Image (cartoon, rainbow, N blue to C red):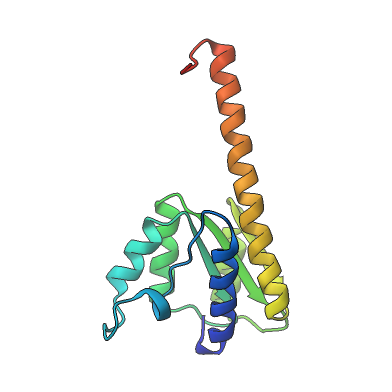
Length: 149
């Protein structure tokens, strides 16, 4: 993540906020006024969140890695959205490649309109997937005779 993604961060937060039942947390809007950047606070929010959206266009800072690990450990949905046409550092490209072997959504975006659509669609699909999994679990409990009903 770099400071060149300020507009993209705002678009992403707005897209999250449009999805029913979702509210983005991001430092610029939600941190206490006057508070200095707190890795502890960011990691705490990442670990307890339903999802983490990682915007990538270059190097990833140690705090971004810490937030990502916390989100993974907390069971959050993870979405890695990569700016098209950017030459990623080798360690970042390897990190993304490693994450693609797990339950992580990775997509490329070219501009803020495309990013907005990707975020909204990814979250909407995650909701549908969660409902489908809950339905399957419920059906399996009924079939096994362990229904909560």
